[in-house]
Length: 250
Image (cartoon, rainbow, N blue to C red; front, side):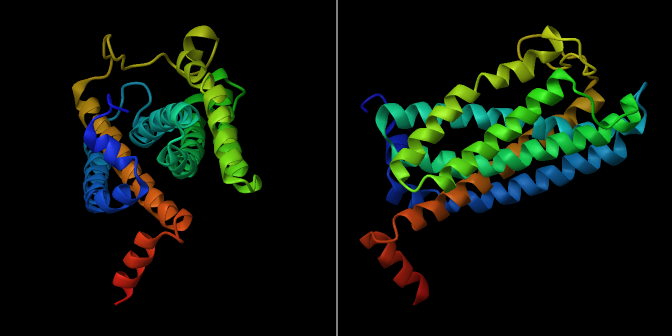
């Protein structure tokens, strides 16, 4: 693929990915953890109470970042599915397998934190709200990706099945995004638009952005570490893996 940058083309090789990505993982862990601590402490302890929701709004600093990231990870898995179907890149399959559990956990946390937020805000932990239901569907899509990988014994067929489910399921992400506009829901419209106005005061916004960035960085580190593990597992018979294993044990 001549149009792909050389560094990205290099990372498409399991061997080069395994070697090149290792130094990044620890930095992603460290930066993500520090940023998450700073943003969370700032948001939970130092910003003033919100005018209408009081202190209960502070769960925003956990709920919003993980909910948005869960959607973004699914989109990235769908893109990896297209890459796998078109170019048959092994690392695209590895990414789907590594990212699905992380996205599944983030979606579960988004649902739980939303329930915690809903109790003081709406007076109930769960309603069959369009956004909640579409987020629950996202959780089941992630769970389906994980199950498919485990129940299909043929690796090539499993990768194809994951790719197809990821691509088809991607239609659910815009439904989550626009559910507050298309349906009558308890959720408020988006307070931050990529190319529009921001309706959140800066005093609340800064720690929120810190947590969004930090959770993204930390999740990237987890996914990359899991990808390295899968590369070792799937290439255990390769000479370079055996040489690496011998060098590690000496």
